[in-house]
Image (tube, rainbow, N blue to C red; front, side, top):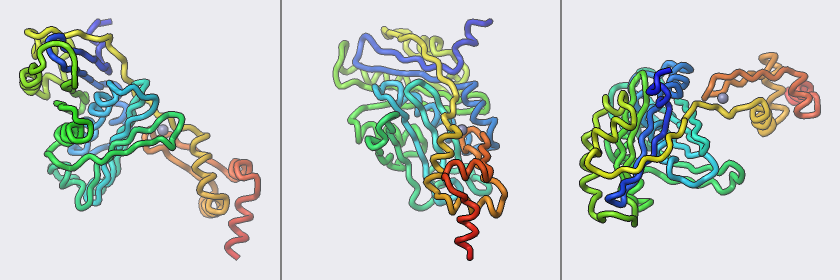
Length: 296
Ligand SMILES: [Zn+2]
């Protein structure tokens, strides 16, 4: 197998020796195809979702956190919802909801009045420790909004270059560290070099080639490459929990009308079907009888 093929779906973190700056490059090919194969996303949304997915991996890259980083756009315009998740084991998934045609306009315009961009850190074990931040819809792109956010809320000067095509979703993050070795004022130079990275390079070149092209005059320490993959953690058990929260009578109503309860995962299209026996077992009573009773 071609050695370069193995570099797809990878995260490459790096650190500058001559300045207190760290960075990461991500390129998602197969994982991105998994997302695209499940829904026919309109072009402007494909771009947004791909950029969000690359950004989620880059932002999760330096977090020491056992859980999930979630980026969510909520809108009242043509775009209703876009969600990407990146887990600390470097697995990703994404989904979106929209209505009608999506014009080729800015993210903010697509979201309409009251649009929101939310960043969530959800611990794997203790969900009560879930943390949410609001990303201001300032800037023309997902990258610009997240750069503003990192500066304001984390006091971290960050540069994010993101790109997405039908073939790949990719990005590069550069971040000035509060302290570190090397020349303290090396940041503007490294940031400027980073800004020369073009979308087509980001989407097609391997990490080592990008680093060479941008920073061949810098000392860059490269960490081991990490694999990123698509994975949906939905399960029959989780769907059952959701039905339990809905309540036996509600579920009985659906069974009366449709014969079975069918839930489709928004992220991976997996179908989960619960028939009357399954539901009765779940609730430990005759849910259809309860629904009939309630109708009288
Ligand atoms: Zn799923």
